[in-house]
Image (cartoon, rainbow, N blue to C red; front, side, top):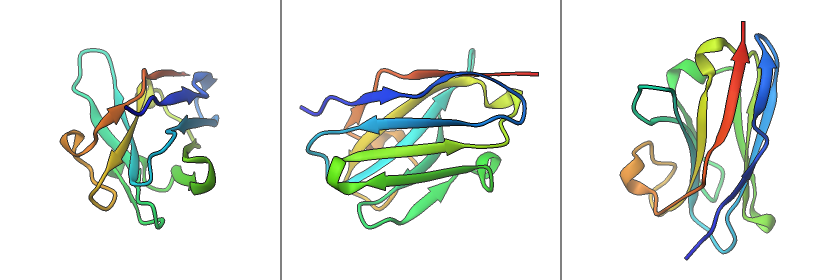
Length: 120
């Protein structure tokens, strides 16, 4: 069992930045981030493979950057140029054997979620 530890959410104004972190001890496969806004389904945000291949959802391309520190089994998500529509609970997902998959079904472990709120 892998327990994910997330951190870094918060309240920020439009145009601001946040950095999310997620530690997944023992996970050496792809990791990703999803988000869920009130009344909406959980959606893919970004993913990264062990070797550094990345993928992004169209709404966040050019604004968010995913990275990882393999020695720490930690993935980061840098959120820049934030918009009110980015407001959601952001979930870390880990240990997908595929290369940076975008489907929730491909991930075996999930974090508890961290709230990101962007005020207008």
